[in-house]
Length: 164
Image 1 (cartoon, rainbow, N blue to C red):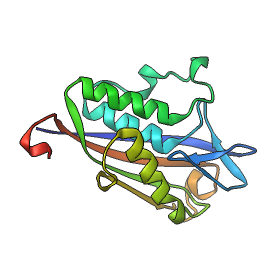
Image 2 (image 1 turned 135 degrees about the vertical axis):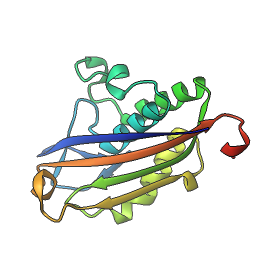
Image 3 (image 1 turned 180 degrees about the horizontal axis):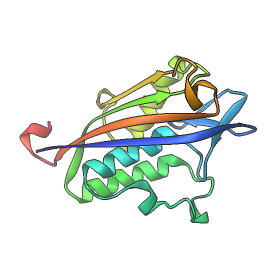
C-alpha cells in the first residue's frame, strides 16, 4: 500500500533575519521569520510525512506557542517525524518539494538541501526531489514579503515488496 501526504508552509521575509532552507544558510539581505529557524522546506516535508501516515501535523508536536522550539533547527522536527512514521510501520518512498521564492536564486544550494534532507530522513538522495521557482513578481512571494514551500511524501508499508 502506498500512502501520500501533502505539506505546505509559508513564512514572512524580513531584513535582519537568517534565510535557512533545507538546513542551508542562504546569503540574502532578508530572511525567514519563524518561531523555530523558519525553514519552510523542512516544515512542509514534516507535514507531508505526518499527513501520509495520518499522524497529524507539525503544530501538534511542535506548537509555535511553545518556547521549547524557539529558534530550534527544523531538522530536529524532520528527524522526529521520520521516527514517528517508522514506529507507525511506514518507510519513505519519495519526497518531492517545490520552494517558491522570488529571490535569491537557489540552484546552487539545492544539492546541499537534498543531502541535508536525505541525511535527516536516513534515505538515499535519489528519493528526494527539490525544485525552486518564483511567482513572476505576483503576490506576497513576488514582492518578497514572504515565501512558501509545497511538498509531497509517498510512504509504503515497511518490508512490503512494493516498497523496495
